[in-house]
Amino acid sequence: EGVVGSQTEATFGSYYETQLPFGFDSSGTGDLQRGSYSNDSIHAGAAIVRGGYGTKRLPWQPHLEAEYDYATGSPHTNTDRIGTYDQEYPSNHNAFGLVDLFGFQNIKQDRLNLLLAPRSKHGGDGDLLLLFQGGSLHAATIHDGIYSGAGASLIAAPTGGFKSDDIGSEFDASAKYIYHKSFVTNIGVGHFFPGELMTSENHGAPLTYAYLGFTYRFKVEH
Image 1: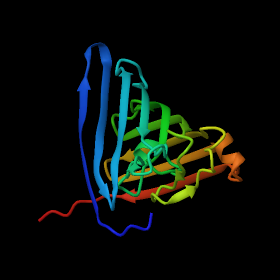
Image 2: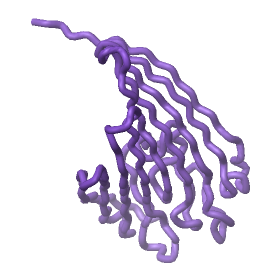
Image 3: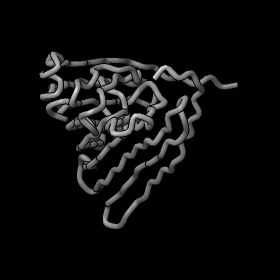
């Protein structure tokens, strides 16, 4: 709007984690952002809610979890109000998996997580964790843009908004193996399937991300 001014923003919220009867559990976080940006007011917020079930009585000790993530966008119905959530942090692996293309702004996601921890057959010589995740990503409002993991504008919303809110879907598979508490191997692959919003804006290329890492941990006694 061309009006010079300062920005004052406060983010306040809470986090919870609880163990429920019969192997069920839940965790989540929610926060609100309020303040001002020059002569505009800030009204934004975000939430992550998870609910799962796990059992250690089975050999693979499966834990299945459903998750919903939401961060507000600006519908631009009020030009004096900013509704796009400020993600504050430059990485969103915790919410959006390995590919991590998008910021936690104007976005919502339904995700399913499956964690497996097979019991060792060698007397506890090694610990293995397997994680599989699948998520469906959508724009919170079609009248706001899509943002990158760094919080910058990735795709600006056209006049009248996007024709679809379907950003795409992602599947991730990763594993972590710890041998004798010292040698750690991490491996994983993630694939993003672009949705109608991406393909209609000439961002329709799928993306595959893979990694392999080795770590040796040691302790120096004094």
